[in-house]
Amino acid sequence: MKFGTLTFRAMGGVAAFGAVLLGGCDAVTSVTGGADGQEVAAAALEPNLAQPAVGDLWAAKLDEFSSYEFGDNGEELPAAYGLMKVIEVEDDQLVLITEIGAWPTAEGTLGELGGDLAAISWDENENISVDRAELPALVEQGHILETRRMAE
Image (cartoon, rainbow, N blue to C red):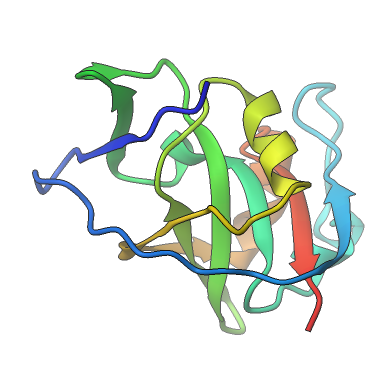
């Protein structure tokens, strides 16, 4: 079951809702590391992380990136997994937004990443900056699970 309540941890209130409809997909790429402790060097990053593009999607552990609390009926999830979308690419950092809502397990967001994205709503109120140099560690720690590059 996907949990749809999103509350601000630091600011209070409820996020504004907006939907983005996305088209086709070139591929879903699995990211190695994390669970098996395999080290992931920058040179070994899968292509969507080595050369990120605006519109790339990540299945990720949202509570490691977002300042929001994810929960349902006032109870915070022990872990929150969901999609993130790259909205800006710079030489040394990326800016991403998260979907509104979260899954309590990784399996939910992995299925979502490979499926029809028409119903995904994005939280455009929280921009999350990620240093590109941190990507290998984020993969190794299991915070980034898989990526998808949308067809142009």
